[in-house]
Image (cartoon, rainbow, N blue to C red; front, side, top):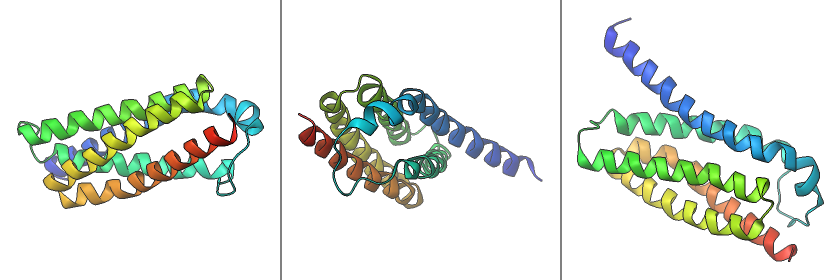
Length: 162
């Protein structure tokens, strides 16, 4: 294997690891609340079963990591790439913060505030990534769609549990 290919593989692995690590940090706050507080909430009819969330998020974090690497590789020295990667970091932090607030603090209201900010940051990240690399932008579309669904779910839980 040549050095360039090895560097690409390592880069992808590190990028995916960073995203999966964010998911792991979020799960520290999510997991204990699933069978207790979250189970006690009224939820809308379209709420997926709890077991669906883990495989969906593992997949989304992997796609996010690959997308991040595709953009990073375009030349982190470029201003647009640095801006896009910075915004990616912000949305990733908001992603973790949502778990802390919604599940850890057990607050659908503040969770909604965070997820709306996350949705805006994710939309902007997807657009910036797409401008840099169509592949990178397309890789974020499933995350954007799931984030949109999660926003509606968060709002519905807030309405059903005043």
